[in-house]
Image (cartoon, rainbow over all chains, first blue to last red):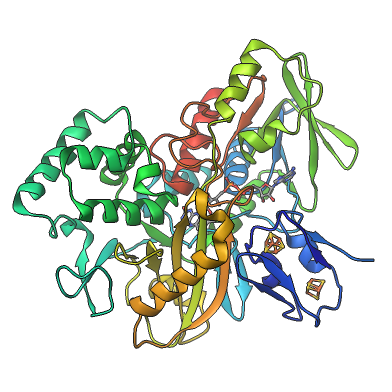
Length: 53
Length: 433
Ligand SMILES: Cc1cc2nc3c(=O)[nH]c(=O)nc-3n(C[C@H](O)[C@H](O)[C@H](O)COP(=O)(O)OP(=O)(O)OC[C@H]3O[C@@H](n4cnc5c(N)ncnc54)[C@H](O)[C@@H]3O)c2cc1C
Ligand code: SF4
Ligand code: SF4
């Protein structure tokens, strides 16, 4: 998962992540515990999260 | 009975503006279809459950004019059942304990909002009383709120208070708020009175509207990104979603003028359209940071706003669990601060957040709390898509027939946040119904 430039830091992604893998302070940061489920990307209003394949 | 087909309306976006419009139209004989990009409904005005707390996608669970404001009236008019409880006190101002101090490090005292002129000298108190009265009859036409205050009453306190009030309610500094809009807001405060909290938070409003829309035959699609607005002969005729065309008699966009403008293709650059584009250049979104705190004991103790004019960044804080305890797990409180982020500080967001966190430490010195979540809003997911006062010229129309803009990018005059959204929707409905 990659956070793109359009991220505004609204933390919506973090609240929907089941593994608590996203920390947000001004911008989102995805940590290693991420299981690549892709849910955060669906809930991002800025289309800032790129799902890695 | 009636063989005539219902007129069709398409709404782009299921934020508060889109849902209010959909509810109005669905209860007025339109066949309504709402298309929302996200998997959820409500935009920046709904709850997100986080660690048992009802946080939100944006708003601080507060309606600026409570149970008697334009939003509450519109909810009632469509039959949306929401219990809105007035905050009492409406607002409290936190001052440093020791006169002359410039922060809260030596303690604080709280005064009711109506006593806002107490820290002024007797002469300045009189001057401000006269100013408030005369502007009700002769509202200022030009300049910012800060300029207006300093022209009549030069006082550091008024600058701080204006920043705190405008920062809390508009996410703007006093210097960036137009005096005309500010006094229009003050007169709405007299007319509609102060804030309130919907029981159940923002989502209670959204759920009630969804009920009205669906029970009147309307549909709301989620996960549907509108990629184009179809324009024919200067008229909106429908939209494009996932490559499929959907036609309608009316298109209402909930995503602001600027974002909507990106959804047209091959437009004839008429003079009217060029003028419209010039107006759009003046629109700027307002930015802010919200810090959500969890506490075992109330940090504020009432359901009104705590304005913090002596903080570095935080403009105000609320604790809605004093009105609706169910917005937090049993025995806990949800306390949320808001700070405006100035446009030139957007590149230093992390530093701005750090200053906000320091403010909270001082404001709640000696109290125990946990920082649940820090949310920042700017650009295309802002506090207001158009900072208050900047959308007054464009209003809700576009250069195209049958296409209107609603939401916080096209608010009605003097309308704070969601109240402005309701006033804007009312303007549109007046045009089409
Ligand atoms: C931190 C913060 C605190 C706030 N506090 C308060 C408060 O206490 N009280 C108050 O009254 N207001 C408050 N506000 C303001 C209020 O939340 C917003 O003004 C309001 O929610 C905006 O509603 P809207 O309908 O204009 O837009 P939105 O809620 O943004 O709705 C637009 C919808 O359109 C969707 N969309 C976008 N593009 C497309 C597309 N191409 N196709 C389909 N769908 C699309 C979006 O996903 C979104 O759901 C606050 C805002 C923030 C950010
Ligand atoms: S939801 Fe999107 S914009 Fe918001 S913090 Fe996460 S990545 Fe950034
Ligand atoms: S992909 Fe899934 S696990 Fe990874 S950060 Fe996003 S929501 Fe969390």
